[in-house]
Image (tube, rainbow, N blue to C red):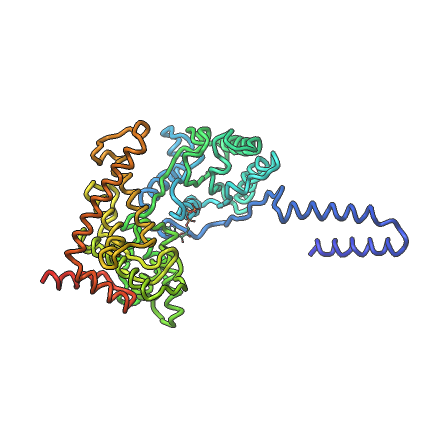
Length: 490
Ligand code: ATP
């Protein structure tokens, strides 16, 4: 408002001077410079030092964060040193200044920092590492200073004596010194952060806790990780199956669910998903229900939402009849081998195109798996190459659709070799020739492809029946596939 009055008066004054015969060029030049300065400061954020992303009290608490039991436990334990600081000091426990949360994107690091502020009744300020760095030396350091000052001011204003400063992507400002091309600015910024953290003293009446988050802890400068700075590192990994179910339950709390919804099954289907992915699944399911004018979210909505989050939006492409048949045979090949290797492992198969896939088969393993035997890795190779082998068996040759499958098979074969599970035994990667690796890799994949060919020949009738059903219905569930197999066995 004030800005507008000032601008209007300045324009009126220049016009008046111009009309009355004054030389207005110097005024125009001055005005232009003022506007440019304003643009740089306000719009481009240069010299900007306000970190207003804070709330007096965040409304997130630990009960709204699913899975992450260990992370929550470790974090709460560390925060208790702050809440019961006198008792901690009596035992000589070092004053806690920083906690580093490390883990993949979307696992709840920001939520944990907000919950930490809530738990300790502190004001919460958030900034991202990239907000500190500009091309001008000294700007980042000034921003760090300002951030700490602002935390103190905000806490005082709200009659609090604690503040939590959350710095996301801390690797941007806390990366190893000397590793950036414009390293003067980066180094100065990091140095300032270290100075501010060193300046936090146990006898201060204002307690500041810095929570940093990164998914590249390996990039951080040693000085940041030194005891007395980021004293605690808390890992925030991708959630387990139980964790995924809890996260789904949290995000379904305010949504109407149909009776057929089985969140346990959705959790099983979503190995590798982060909390952010799961939130998106529930949201997408609700959108699908809305589009279909339904009042409740069903299991089918959730299933489709999982596919969408995993593979992307449905494509508009229209394959020819021949291509559709080929895609159906390919996907049925994958599904048959998966189901025979591990009964109950197929969730469904479809010839609907999504993302980069013209069709796909989704697996639904009973348990999350973190270790694999050679046999299990070979079975994965079998599932990967089964699409192309099914095409060869029923259509005489395979197609470019198998490109990604072979890449996957190659990756798994590399894993077999690198982990000492191949005929080469334990190897030193540096001293083994590429040709040798290639030879063994080829052997592994060829052997598995031969086995798959033999199995598919045996199950040819089912391969034909299931792929025909897939062509007509676009979608075959894992249960339908299992019924085909049971009928054949009976
Ligand atoms: P990034 O590393 O990309 O900054 P992050 O680890 O900080 O990600 P958040 O910003 O905390 O992730 O999570 C993003 C969103 O995902 C949250 O707002 C929430 O909806 C959902 N989410 C993530 N993890 C969880 C969880 N453990 N429980 C419940 N919701 C979660």
